[in-house]
Image (cartoon, rainbow, N blue to C red):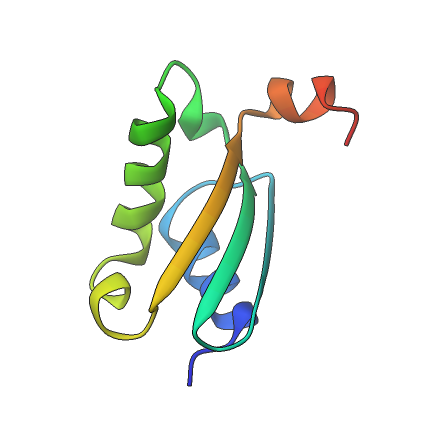
Length: 80
């Protein structure tokens, strides 16, 4: 069973991130991801960047992943 730390590592290895936090129960996961790679992209495009970083793991290991994506500027504006 995949663990949140593994998903965090997969994301960090697949894309440039300023911050990643993943929580979950082994089946369903929630992620907060901050990356410059999201700049100028729609929310759907941002999620596609993350899906590409996770690759085939989204089909096999990860049952469900909800995510909140931010650029570093958006993250700072949110007061994080």
